[in-house]
Length: 293
Image (cartoon, rainbow, N blue to C red; front, side):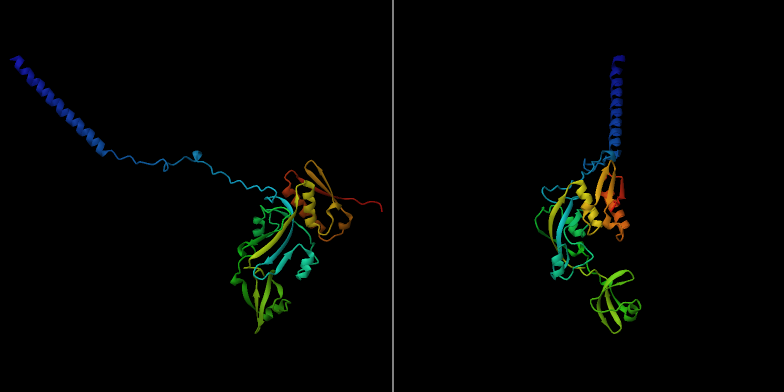
């Protein structure tokens, strides 16, 4: 009797185990189904911590051999013309200035100092100077927006004739005047009203420059003399005695400019220029020497 009952017990245990196995499978399946799907992110989309982000490489300025580079001290012969009219509006050539009727007695003609990239000339020209070969005449064309700007119709206004007369202005066509500190040109006069144009005379014009770099200044003292000559117009820079002691520059003032006009403004301008372009200089001092006659 006992032997016959054993198989039933075994069967009951097997059935119970099978039922438990089924329940476990259901739980596993249920767990798998209920689990949220993990979002798949590509390697490119993964956020990189700020500390691990690659910093963009700084673009290196192109260096030109035997040609102008940004920051160079150069002396240039230059003539600027309007492409549309061929009119010469600027030149370092005195003879050409006289021929074109733009000679100015107050200025000094001859090669002009330019520190490339520092705004010594028109922005559009300044940006195009790097790469210009030395001692070779080249032509550089500049669009209006990088020269004297586009024409602005809002800067063309009608003003009553009596208002201009009250300011001491005798208006006539082509007259270059100044109204409340603004330069302008009179375009037309009639019926008690005057058309005044505040635009630059060369606004909206394509500009052409003929440029020749005649000197590349690399010596420190030559550069300083060029900066002096830019402020003290018409004075031979060899007359200035320049001495350097550690971080100080001492400049001897020649006799002929002791009583010159605006000498203090010129001295300050030179000092600021030297401090700007020579980082190892902390002080500029002027001295005057009076000798027994």
